[in-house]
Length: 244
Image 1 (cartoon, rainbow, N blue to C red):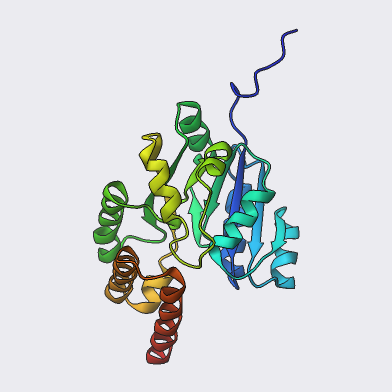
Image 2 (cartoon, rainbow, N blue to C red; image 1 turned 135 degrees about the vertical axis):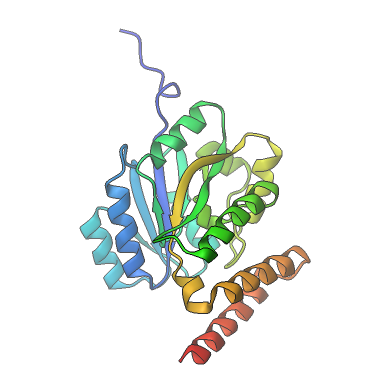
């Protein structure tokens, strides 16, 4: 009997999640990933807090827990290095994928893509701000740079060739996405990935949107990711005080 060509079969997918004190959202995501058909080959959680609570949660949900440094870029690099799948799928803890998300990744890669991202959508009931922001975010991703909350995926080979994520706390995916885009084999999927709107609801829809754009603009003008992360942390504490 002829040996089966492993590259003609559906590529196995490793889901990689960088988290930091986000156990409630992670619990929802892990439950969602476990219900996908097909499921990811494996789920790796790189915990920047190295917390016992997160470790137990991963054990309960069948995910592999890795203690990491609290820096998203370094966490994602660590997860990619430990993953065994032919396709790497990077997720934020507050994402909820569609039931056919893994199948969509497999189909895209079999059709010739080396990577891609999902269509942005907000979780929860319809609301005016959601209707306004969703198409704008998807347009911005199409003409500019999709960010990590859109579930970026990439073949293991291409990830290594393009040097993976940058080991920085913010905008760690930008260099990778730009390099993948230059190959013209980086695909926008129409399958939605639902994102929890809690940060917009906490900070205010307009303020959160403007803060995101300000950070992206500053980064594009050459401000370092480390400096922006420091500013962002101070801004979050100020918002928390104002809300209190």
